[in-house]
Amino acid sequence: MQFVAFERAKQGTGASRRLRITGRTPGIVFGGETPAATIELDHNALWHALKKEAFHASILDMELAGTTQKVLLRDVQYHPFKPLVLHVDFQRVDEKTRLHKKVPLHFVGAEESPAVKVDKCAVSHVMTEIEIECLATQLPEHITVDLSNVTTGSTVHTGDIVLPKGIKLVLHGRTNLTVATLVEPVKEVVAAPVVAAVDDKKKGKGKK
Image (cartoon, rainbow, N blue to C red; front, side, top):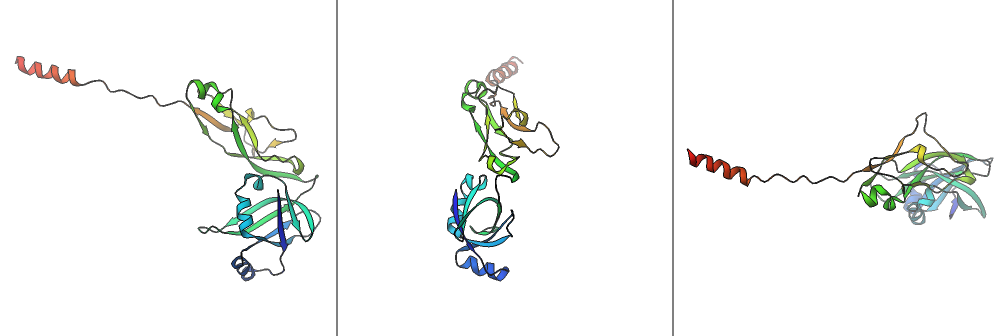
């Protein structure tokens, strides 16, 4: 994905506030051998870009001052209740940059699995994203989790995920974390009829 950024001369809280009033969002780009630079972006264009999953988990082409740089979105600050982006951070990357990044999980094949297709189980997604380590050039937009062979009562763990070449999971010392579980459908319990029992009681009273 490509986007346009502009050099920002003025800094500080007051300058950022005035910038937002004009429909721009302040930001910064850092990393690599070039010093960090303050930038600004068109807020509406940025707002719509942030709704796309690829903008969060892929290498972006940032056009700045007539040149294009490879960058990665690192942080976004939103207003607590207004639809407003307050600040964005980007990191410059190249083919040698090694990253730790959270990427979304895409679950596929569940509808064809024995658990869902035959036993009508529901898939409970315990994790929706996962942290990985890789070179910037190998960064995937998402990690696919294949559920086509899951069976009733089974659990999908991080060890079951087939990773693209060069991708490593970052689990921070933990092992085989649960990614998804298969929940069996709740069986309806039909209450036993009570009419017969009431009739028996009435008959018993009549005999006395």
